[in-house]
Image (tube, rainbow, N blue to C red; front, top):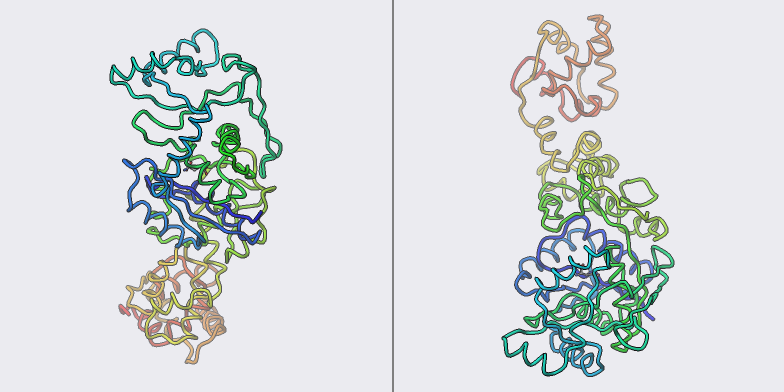
Amino acid sequence: MDTIVRFAPSPTGRLHVGNIRTALINWLFAHKSGGKFMLRLDDTDQARSTEEFADGIREDLRWLGLDWDLEARQSDRFDRYDAMVAKLKADGRLYPCYETMEELDRRRKRKLARGLPPIYDRSGLREDDKERAAHEAEGRKPHWRFLMHNFDGEPDNIVETKIGWDDLVRGTQQVDLGSLSDPILVRADGSYLYTLPSVVDDIDFAISDVIRGEDHVANTAAQIQLFEALGGDIPKFGHHNLLIGADGQALSKRLGDLSISSFREDGLESLAVVSHAATIGTSDPVRPFHSLIDIEDQFSFSKLSRSPARFDPQELRALNGKLLHETVYAEVEARLDARLEGRSKPEVEAFWLAVRGNIERFGDVDMWNGIVWGAIEPVIEDGEFIARAAELLPDEPYDEMSWGVWTAAVKKETGAKGKALFRPLRLALTGMEFGPELKLLLPLIGREKAHARLSGEKA
Ligand code: GLU
């Protein structure tokens, strides 16, 4: 069986870090096994799904480099789901239930109060045509439940029914269908819940491996019976651990500050986002990668931990800085050229090597561009010392040695050393307390500008 996996978001919001982790794990799995990666838009909830969110999902995946080989949307496939519903009805596997959600809720609570498992008692299944007609006459519409095969003889006689699979991430799994309610597949208004369309699609698109978050483990057992009921091949399943927020709660798709688009707008590198997604919640340390291929090389299900991982936006930002600090010039050449127009290639390269260790976001290069080549207000605390240093500035050409030559001369002349020597020079040359190594900045600033700044001029 060829490998085909799918990432199946609902276009009811923007993607967040948790979602793209699922997307990335699927993408990596497909690429590692030479298979295909499918984007499936689970948009059966027509009221909440929008075209804008669908576009947003595509944009986010593209930005992250997670390209897909095929795409489908569930709203194009209602005929197919209707046909499968007809089949399940004909086979006696889908039965109408007329309880309202409030009635079900009341029954559930009563069961819980009596210490019983709150599972649906299949009363809808026991109703005859006359009773059903009476409900209809009252204007009620049924929702439809999938009859699970978890009984012996009569459906009332529910017995322990272990459904097992060899999970790609969690190893041997077993869920007792006897402890679950028959899932609702179709709502009273005729709309589909996620379960049936998902299984029908997984069959029709020959999905070989269903890889998703571990919040779907219980669904998987019922879905396996649905695959069987629809006559489809049962794929392999893998359920990865989930991310939780700083408060320990599940990440919600509506948390705007954790959305991929907010990271992009914040100026984070897409590679930092995918590096973070690839290493958080694994046995590997969170670290930067410089390409998806590098991530692919080290990816393995066996590294995923079994417990949820806490997402910390601060950690992602730090990782972004770390990635930039070790990024070679060739990787950012085009982006730098766009920001540093008119500068020669050797200048731009030297600039990058000087400043990359001092930036957290790529956009920070603008600030250093301004400090190196723009006009700054020098900060001079001890005018006499700085005036002496200005006189001692060596002649050009400058290279990385020039700073050492100059400061040795200033030290000899003034007796200043260590912080007392370097801090005032940095303040005068850059207006800043901290920054890139001055032996790298001085050749970029050049003698004329350096001299002007040391003389207190805005230059
Ligand atoms: N739309 C479903 C979700 O986002 C897909 C789950 C699945 O992968 O089967 O939860």
